[in-house]
Structure formats: C-alpha cells, structure tokens
Image (tube, rainbow, N blue to C red; front, side):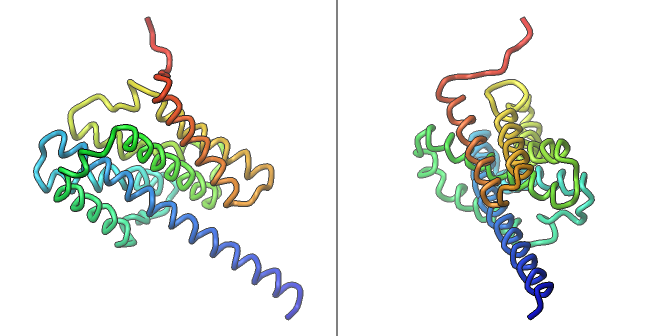
Length: 219
C-alpha cells in the first residue's frame, strides 16, 4: 500500500469514527431530552398524544432547526427512523412508568437535563463545523440545537420559554460550544474537543442551579 493510500485510509477511518461519535451523542441527547419533554407533558396533564408530541418536540426540534439552517435536508432526525424511535420510546416509558419517574429526585432530573444540554450543544456545533460553517455561526447553531426543542415545548405549553427568563441555560450551551470550537482551533482531536465542550456546558449548568445563578435583568 502506498503512503497516499495509507493516508486516505486513515482519513476515512477518522471520519467514520467521528460520524459514529456524533451519532452516539445525538442518540443520548435525544433520549434525555425526550424524557424531559414527557415529564413536562405529564405535569401539564396532557394525554398520551400530548406526551408523544412533547417528547418528539423537546428531543428533536432543535436539531431540525439546525439542519434546516445549514442546508442538511431532509433533517437527520426525519431521515433516520432511529431518532423518532428513541424519542417516542422515552415518551412511552415515562407515560406508563410516570409514577416511578416522578419519584426521581429533582437534583437527578437537573443532572440529566444538563447532560442532554451538553450533548446536544457539542453535537450541533460539530455538525455545523462539518458543513463548513464559520466557527462563530457553529457556536450559535450548537446553542440552538441545545435549547430549540425546549423553547418550542414551552410555547406549546403556553408559557414563556424558560430559556428566556430563568437560570443559566442557553449561556451554558453557548459556553460549551465555544470551548469546543476553541479546542478544535488548537488542533485537539474531535473527541477531546467535544468532551471538553460537553463538560463545560454540563458543569456550568449544574453549578448555576446549585448556586442559584441567573443572568442580570433590567431593573
């Protein structure tokens, strides 16, 4: 095998590994956010259909918006049945086991939500970079991926989106996406960059809830 062939093979293997990592992160984030959407639907006393709608919306709308903006159409979550299957599966699980799910302590829910936010923020940023978007725009798209579904969920529930009025939420996603882009600019590997971004987003979100941090408001 020539050196060029070896380099091509190595590049192909690296790209395949990055794709698998991105898909795994997307699936994990989809499951966690679908659980959150289903819990919000049950708290609002919605029926089974309502639970399914909010599970799908919370988990996948952020990614759909991102894909439409970068020209990845049809969006990945609509092309690959596994996204919808994971979202609906999480919704069904919460619907039939909600008595047990509601007993989960609030701190655990916060941690799971922060984990989903971190996963989606880095996955959205990575996909935007893969499509050749400017790093600044990639950071914004990563943030949209993380908070878009929850924003639409709150609109469906006729409430002001939580991301606009309380807690360090979108800011955490923005910080995680920014750290990931900086790490990539410093030529760190895709896995290391994504891990760093996800950890920053997760840590900032959890600490902000623990310390009751909020962004300043006009007095």
